[in-house]
Length: 356
Image (cartoon, rainbow, N blue to C red):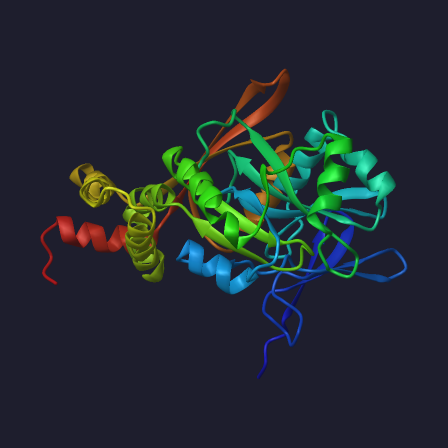
């Protein structure tokens, strides 16, 4: 019997549904919002961005001799911010109205002109990367302050199409809303400049770069070797809970990146070896594979709502809560740990001498 692809949910007094699986032409993560009169509004999923492993070949194959924009790729989580029935909410990539993300959007409304954007464009959607102390991605940008930050990278039209980059830049600049850094407009003949930009991103241990067509409708992404090294070291303790391609793809990308950019192979061999050794170092004093998170929230009621969402995917072992001032505002600082069950079991067997 076929499972209903739609999951019906509520957030406060908002009724909505999300596609938990692809259904025909409708992508997973698409949401449907219902108003008081049971009218429907479809919130399209953010389009898939294709990944390339070789920079020159990827750009040439995807864009040919056409113009494209280059923007920094950030490593947080993807959120769609929109106005529904006079309320501003935040929807995750999976199509869930997130109490944590929505709370932070309202926090930022006192600082940024988010309200003004939706007064001007009530039916459009701000697509943004959320970074910092969050419950979804424990990999944290060390250059950001405590709490959360956001950077807009697209504006979605009611049809689901994305606004042309130049128009988006103009709107976001006028409203002074945070946005991802744009390196400019290029063609394949500018490859040496593009390569220099990506080389600097790698030197600074940044995540990578995204290239977008001038029309804004298609994009590719490329990740730096240094970012992949950080991932390998950080996530080795959870090895048995993560699909094997997570590691093998990063190993291949590091190898290809090192050669395409003419980097010192001996140096990167040492870096890779060190990342692996450091990743396994917790096994010396091992009590389990626990991934630790710290978040800041205004409301403990919203923490309860968030907890209900994330415990459907992960095991929360414990949480610690204390009040903390952040940027002149009193918030709840919440620490919790996620237990990776398969890794905990297997590593405990290994270090206690169990045979293969």
